[in-house]
Amino acid sequence: MSLKNCTLTGIDENTSLDNIRQMSDKFPFVEWGVLFNIYLGTQRPRYPSLKWIKKLTQTHSDLNLSLHLCGSLTITAFFQRDLIDLCKSFKRIQINAYFDQYPASPELIKRCFSLISPTEIIIQHNNDSKGIMKLLGEVNNYSILFDSSRGAGISPQNWPNYIPSFYCGYAGGLGPDNIKSQLPLIESASQGFDYWIDMETKIRTIFEMGSGRDNESCIDFEKVEYVLNAVEKHKEKGLLEQPFPEGDMSLLFTY
Image 1 (tube, rainbow, N blue to C red):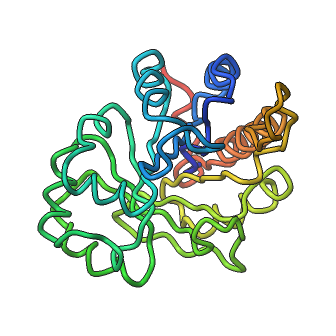
Image 2: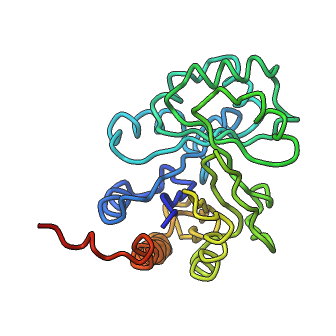
């Protein structure tokens, strides 16, 4: 089975860290995505404050965490090397911009990627990113994410085929309503290589916040557990279907 991780993006101040811990203990393959946008300044649904993010990495450093950099000011700060220490406190970071929008030269992009190694960098894949992928040939700490919906939460009619020699992820409209039907399709597109999946919008529900606050969209842990159970069963099914080499079962017995 080639599915390695399931990224659930959008945890924030309203997300129960106890629930995150419980889900992580039960499903070790889950990764929690943290959205960060300098422009927003203070906490918003899906966009926690910098103070909260730093505390999260200090007190829960054993969790699988990825930082998703959003907005032009945030991307600029990354390439000005203002976010190097923050990025290094995560196992992976995702740059939510396309290369035709990057405020940096190819040489600076490559230098910044190298500075935060071994932290893995995720770049979104489209036609504009093909040239930069060639430039980064000798940089070994980045992977690519297929998300044709560009964050709109729409699943593609056909998932893109895996690109050999890259660790690839798949996102776009995944959630409790379609995870069971979409996983076999993504598995086929992955062509037997390791991959991960990412989802955000469909694992949220609008809850009443109380205390005079407007209702807000929050991580729904019933949806989270449903998704993770489906992913776990998919992974287990793949393991059970692995054939013995050339049908030889002799390795089952040792003397």
